[in-house]
Length: 354
Image 1 (cartoon, rainbow, N blue to C red):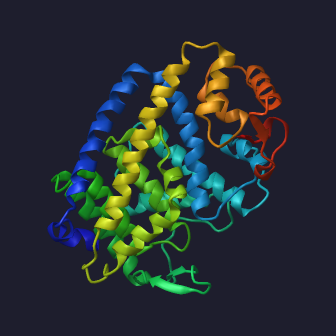
Image 2 (image 1 turned 45 degrees about the vertical axis):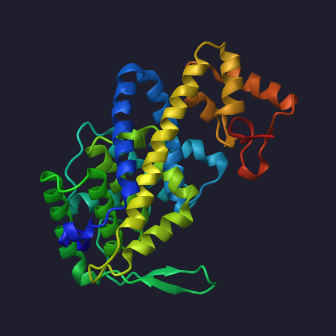
């Protein structure tokens, strides 16, 4: 709880530009609520797309990847799903945990038992188990220079539980007294959580689950409709650099939280911008025929590499035969091609624009 020990000191010297970025988040939160009231079906479609992107990206940040032909089945889940390897098992665990958070009618208070419950969800399909605090030192090591280099030493296992309890209590107190902007409090919580590094494996994914949970509690619902995790994956080096910069001096409570805060607030702001752009784009498709909707979506709005399921999620009400017909037409016209590097054949094929 180093950031919360003296919150006034921690948040002293807030960069001026960050105040403007926080104000934009609050404007975005208000517009998002308006869109939820006015465009519920469109937001449901965006939420389906975002769920897929977030599960995939948060795992990919940690090097947990699954082949393209397996992705749809793993996303959809099912009691009879069989896994081929550990990556698929961990992928499914993150799916279960984020679905629990985003599907909960009421989000419970974050406590140490709840954190361990989420960790148990992450590893529920593996034989490693989960839901336990670390029992050994877990140094944070970088291999950027071709060899292992310790960049941060988290607290020892003997300190972990007491620090984690103090962190959740200090966060609750800061929220209840409105000690600072809620996004800054979420940022401080996540920074301290990652510095404590309380579990043997899965700290990064657990931190991103807690980020989603805490933002939803503060009514920043954008994480449902624009993937924050995907943006973190695309800016992975900046993500780790910001954390490393803000953890320097953490043990002595002399650390500078602003590199991490700026990264987090900027990423959320970009998610709101993306959300608004996607709303505008989908509204522009509404007057077109179904084939033209598919054609325009693929040309201008689909991810660089996409599958039938992405188009289906983006355009509810458009049938798979219509989607495949347009894919065939665009391929014949030389506008798209099958992306062999992404794997998958037939309905699972990945496509890219040329």
